[in-house]
Image (cartoon, rainbow, N blue to C red; front, side, top):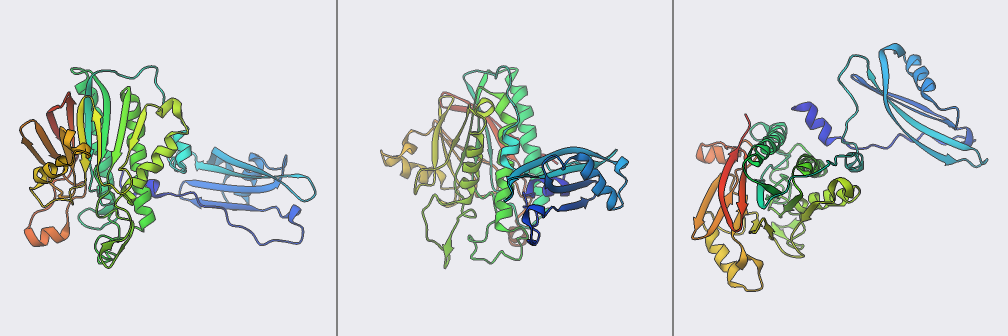
Length: 395
């Protein structure tokens, strides 16, 4: 984990270099050899029938590489019709060094991941729900152990949460797993008016890509573990898409935090056999919250920047006063934003706030002396009651 995982989840499909057009396009056959550590890629373009693995190996040898020291692990191919009517073929062969554990990134496209057969014969059923609540990764900032630390911690906590699900399932019939993505998944550049640019080494697209692929990982991880799986995302202040002069100038639901989950939902539809039982939720147009039923418990999701610290129940009461708002039916409010673990109750209603996934806010440490205590929260719920709650951490 660490640098290699970060590079893998930030990897993007890059188009091949386009050679200068020659006089006879139908004879413009090219080859390209790329070597990065224990991975090599050879792109060969020529007449159909002439392009094969042996030709790619020959090109490796021309570059001074021993062909016996490499093995093919995959290829991608495309055809086109040349002006003379003949069929051209472009194939990219991927090699790894013999004896190496290296390989090409397995997160090249959402489709590559989503098309894998991850179905199981049967998925667990039951009338209990299992909640996985997380947020405030703020991918992109350098504070604490930086992007790599936040990524390692998020993946590790998701893995441990799935282990705890299996352990709880030995005692409680869990049929619904729900993941709440509670905002500020990226550091972004809008929330602080650009003041955090120097301390944010990832580009905005890289931050969004990392978030999207972590959500994709979570979907693949939990999809086989329950007959129903759902994921909800709400907008955080750091994920706001557009701000001018410190003010939001677009709709309240216009957020990179939620758009990342929408992309995963689009991809999941490509494989209904494996992911048809997974539901996705984001706020309605110009809204900031998601309210849904999990095993008979009405769960409201918010980021937490909508109320002052400690005033969550006051905000909830105000929302519930509006009969048109689904908040008046909520049994459980889950929220991020304040970076520390908190649970609170008021009569039959419960509030849960997971800590941040980032290790610290350096500004906060300078001002107050404390670092973070990162992790996520899992909980068991049914029929409006959420009595089992547990903090999940990794070293």
